[in-house]
Image 1 (cartoon, rainbow, N blue to C red):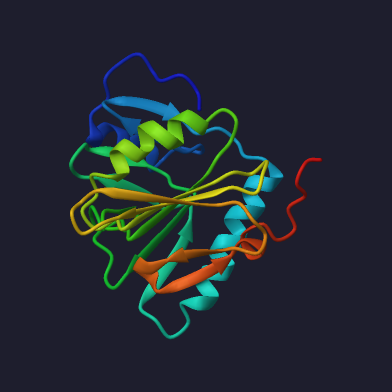
Image 2 (image 1 turned 120 degrees about the horizontal axis):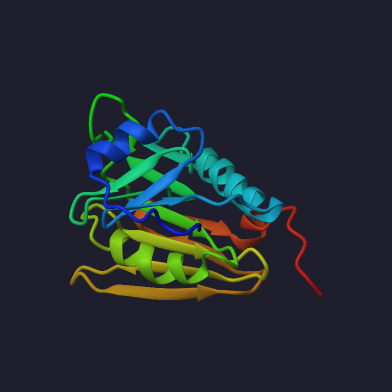
Length: 191
């Protein structure tokens, strides 16, 4: 992630500029951050999630989209671009542009060396404040490692780690499992 701009930006000014921009930016605490490019492995993992989840949603009223859909966190007024977003039923949209979702059920972030801490700590701090969010999934791209953070009935978050090729990521909020071999399909691990 690039360094933020030095001036405070209002959400209205951010959206007006973002809807005309060639590059994606996130807005956090009034600061605009340019989104960095992604690696081949990052792009493949995102594509695997979108394809595999999309196939499992046939006949269901759920949608899965990649990072082209912006998510607004009403409680913090942050605007983020998750790598993968799932929403079920009617989407709650910021406005009639239908490009900013406010009610995701599941958010997936694929870690990059430059965004590891940002995705694990800063973004998760914002995502946890989305009332509809039931799962936050973090996927490593350089090793077989998936973290599933699930919101519990008491509001706490429970993390389950997956790191074996024989395991399946269990996503109770979607009522499905996704084998790690499908998430990492066509990904060459180092070593």
